[in-house]
Every structure is written in structure tokens, then in C-alpha cells.
Amino acid sequence: MTFKRNGCYAGLDVGKDWLDLAIHDVDGTRQFSNSPVGVKNLIIHLSRLDPALIVVEATGGYEQRVVQAMFSAGIPVHVANPTRIRSYARAKGVLAKTDTIDAVMITEYGYMLSPEPQNAKTEEEIRLRSMIIRREQLVEIRAAESNRLHTAHLCMKSSVEDHLRWLSVQIEELEVQIQALIHALPAVQASVNLLEGIPGVGPITAATVQAEMPELGQVNRQQIAALAGLAPITGIVERSGGGGAFLAEERVCAACCTWRAYQVSVITL
Picture (cartoon, rainbow, N blue to C red):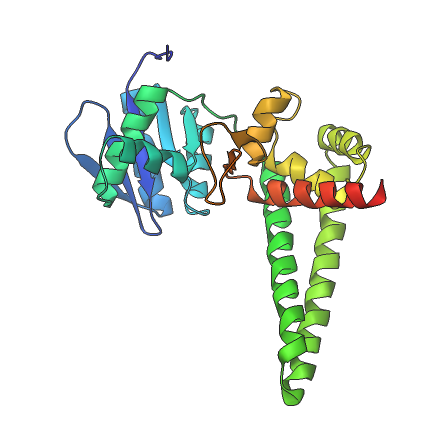
């Protein structure tokens, strides 16, 4: 049985330019601009409602400003995986997708499942995660450029090589900044030290897992595996047949890093 908190439930569909708010059992939606002024007006409006929970759909970073504003205002908020929202909508037979429909579906998802509000992140935690995500992006770009080098025309090879050198320098600088920030955070450093004791786990993998999954030490191993997208979900079968499929949460960097660490540990053992 899902626990219901006192107060209203609301859902927020986040776009690059607009925020669409729907409230459970209230017809229609209300729109705010995804700007400092719009977010401020939204917070004022939500504070008057005394909400039990606001569910926000993760949208690749566009939700960060409004989520941090809710944390600062003491408004209970949960950032939901878009895949789960769409699965809920499909289960209800709702296939159309508009900002209004999405806001309503997010609201219903929050009311029916009542997920736990998330804890606010400190500025240092936000910085750490941002640096780790950026490093992962640069590593992916470097891998793509390295592949291009093999097929590049002779006149373009020097351009690709210059870019590869630049990317390597940027990645190294980010790694230094990541380590410096971790050293300034004793609790994070302690967790990273524990993770580095696992075969195949190095400083960057440990830092990534810690930043992407702060729930470590607070939930059990099955829940952590599910959060990382490394736990097979019973009843969901891959196209190739047999076994359970792996459903990733928003922790893509953590899933990639832990998988690479596993491969290294297998090779070295």
C-alpha cells in the first residue's frame, strides 16, 4: 500500500523554455517560464499550496535550476526517471505526448506511487557531479576522435591528432580538479577510499559512483544495483531471448564505470 502524505501532489513537466505544472484533482495546467523570474514565480505559487510532493521529470539538466530552487525553499521534490513516467502513461493507454499531458501523467505518477522526496545536494556535490559528467563526455568524444583517426584523410590527420591531444589535456585537468574537490569533502573521501578497496575500482570510478549514487550506505545492495541499472528485472525479456533485461536509472555514468571496473577485475584476477 502506497503511503500518502498530507497536502497536494503536483507534477512538473520541464522544457528548455517552459515549466508546465499540474496539480492532482485540479483541472488544467499552469505554465511558467524556465528562467530565474519564472522559477521564482513558480516557487511562490507552490509555497502557497503547501504541497506534499512535487514530482519533476528528469530532462537532461533543464530541471536543475527549478529543483535546486525547490530544495532551497524546503519544498519536497522527487526527480523521476522519464522511462518510468512513460511506462506509467502507456499502462493507462495514454500514447499522446504534449507538455500538458506529460504534466498530468507526472502528477498521477507521483500521487499513485508516492515516491520518496530526495535530499538536497550541496553546492560541492553539484560541482563534483558536473565535473564527472563533463569528464565522461570528453572521454566519449576522445574515443570517437580516436576511431576517426584511422579513417581520416592524410590532410586531416594532424587536425584529429591536435584535437586528441587537447582532449587528453582537458581530461587530465578535470581529473586533478575532481581529486582536489574530493579531498576537500571528508565524507566523500572516506566513501571513495572504501570503494577503491574493491578490485578494478580506481579513483575516477570511485568518484563517479559516489557522485552518481549518494544512496550508497543508505540502501541495500539490491536497490543500489537497480539504481545503477545493473540488476536484471524479472519478467522483462531481451530481444535475444532468455534472462532478464537491464533497466538503467538516471545513473548512466555510474553504470558504465562499474561495468568497466568489472571487466578490469575479471582480466586481472
